[in-house]
Image 1 (tube, rainbow, N blue to C red):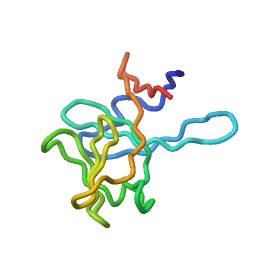
Image 2: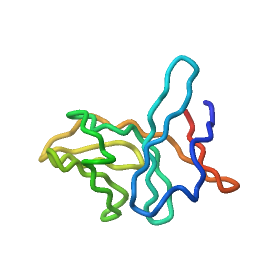
Image 3: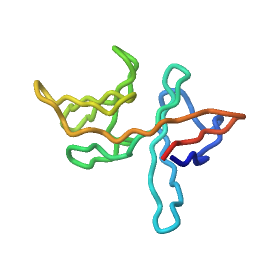
Length: 110
């Protein structure tokens, strides 16, 4: 598993999502970063249900654990493991990545 630098920690503002692009050689991989409660989370930037951009249509909260809620259809995903719910049923998983902060930089494990 590769650990790739994606941002400077100072770029992240509490509760404000930021999408960065990781160069994988053959393509760019978008990764959404969010800092909540001092923790940094990394995830795919699109709602796995309808592909809406979570940077625009997501509400990030720490209530009941770090979560994102899609404002379009109100699906809720856990940022630590990507598990989600839509109404009373399981939603498609949100892809998450382990984020590590070291020496003022944010790294994502891919």
